[in-house]
Figure (cartoon, rainbow, N blue to C red):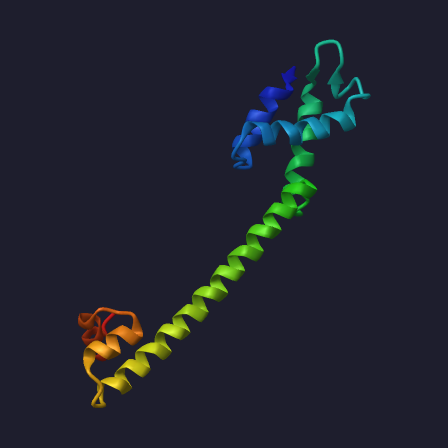
Amino acid sequence: MTSIDDLARAIQDRHDIDTLAAALESVAVMVDQIADDPDLWDADTRTLTPSGVEVVSQAIAESYMVGAVATSAQILLSDIDDTAAEIAKLEEGHAELVARRDELIRAALRTELPRADIANAARVKPARLYQIRDGRR
């Protein structure tokens, strides 16, 4: 017989779940669904039979295979993905703006403008102007 805690630890390891509490929640949800079947759950000892362990383990594995994790967890995953996409977009925009600024600095360096004025306008140190001019990062 296997306790919910023992199975949760195994599920945590198998599916790379960060916290035991999250794994316990997943196992508890599945156990609630099979608790009325004495071939799967022993209500007296509050443990899973070997068949119960197999059923719960398989159900959790299948839910991971199809991406059917808990709704709140799925929302978090979606929010992480959206935020990461926003970061990537901002980084791309940042890179484009830096490239535009660098082009403008190179053009300004070919004029009569004092380097100090160019550096101040670009919000960089004067030494950085030479790196930009030469295409060094």
